Length: 287
Ligand code: NAD
Image (cartoon, rainbow, N blue to C red):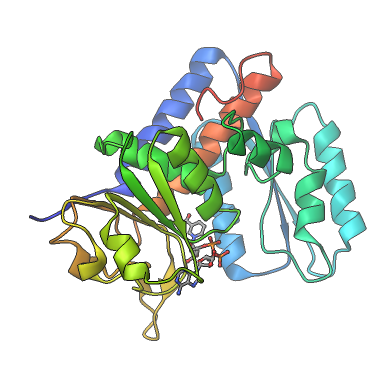
């Protein structure tokens, strides 16, 4: 058996076109504000990709670029101004932040109704109790991939590798909400290989190049690789040894071209959902 390779770029393009059409049909022009602090080239590229995708979907977008020596107080005042601006639907502060700024203080300052990253404790809590509103973009994109590929989730044994607040934890919550039987594994898990071999759905979000070997993959499993790692030779690889897993898995997402583009598509869905909710619709229609 050779796995179906999940083309994140093509799927993300379809989601983005759908968002654009939904916004147009609703007569809404969602507005996204992205704040970046410092000059990190990877962060700058991520921000450019996000705002470009927003513009292509017909959204209004603005980037607020602050210098690396910006104080926490100054950043918080920018966030408050965006919170109070009725013309802004979604606020995203690109992480990581310079060391003088506490990320949690910034995340908690964002109006939860405009928190399109879904990191505010109110949104994280809503997801944890099974009442999701704005959901973190990467795990949301993974759920879209599974749904569009027709992977059976209800009742399936799912393993999430990694317990970060950005990916692993919300991923486990979303799979639980979709009625999977979920195991959350992490750096202290004993015998990861055995845990992986039991999984019908395997989501890897660790950040260790090719940690998951081909013989850790159950025949026919859906393998979604969130990891982005650069090898010594400068090649981008995921957390899964793709070539080894390909002949065993039922479905597999590549790196690059898998989950990455889905994250941006989910950001557009969240921004539209926030815009509709702020105009009196239900939050989370796209969640
Ligand atoms: P993180 O460093 O915050 O969390 C990593 C998690 O992996 C931790 O919970 C840790 O317990 C676990 N872990 C570490 N070593 C392990 C090991 N040997 N065995 C088992 N578990 C182990 O990372 P993150 O922010 O969740 O990101 C994870 C990966 O996903 C990174 O490569 C990151 O670049 C990538 N990422 C991709 C996207 C995307 O859009 N594609 C978005 C976010 C993150």
